[in-house]
Length: 234
Image 1: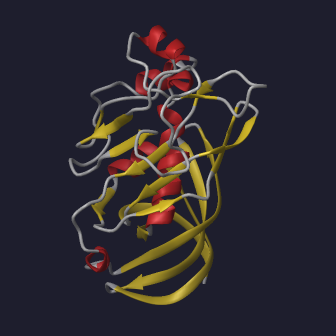
Image 2: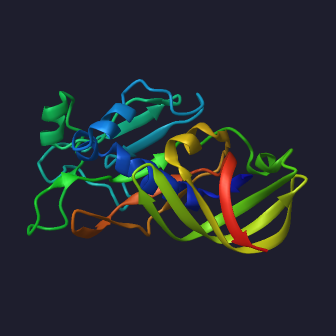
């Protein structure tokens, strides 16, 4: 394992793929084990960790005024100060769990029924200057951009587009075929520092339940994560 620093594009992919899908309430009520793990009020990360999803912020790929059930768009804080604070709902899932609809019922087009989907999902900007994220790392990995990724429940694997070794707090030689994998809840707890940068990735299309290519946005700052499982070739 290594301490890794990932850029905002990778952190946006991580929050969408690894955490966002678990926040979709239909995933939880269909899976009692997941519902138990995703208990509101549970501590998942450090107090500096904030995660959001919402169609209300204007001008992004996942933005709209009303969802496909007519519920007004909102911004839902999923993690507040490191604690699970919310989840994403349709009218149906909100009724089943006794919570409030969040405006996340979406369908690809009129051929499909609306299901719970993400909109724009992001990790809140932190306070650490990006160049300080590398401080005190004797040997680590800096990963940027993404080639692909897959998730299976709580587990994820992502391929980085570019990567370098970090040696004594500085970037060193490039490495290729770098993959980052792990358990999403362990990884959230292992976020050591959150950068003061931020980037929206508007290139994403999301697939679920046979409805592929739904427009979504995701974003985040650079992150420093300890004990990450890294594969790759020097």
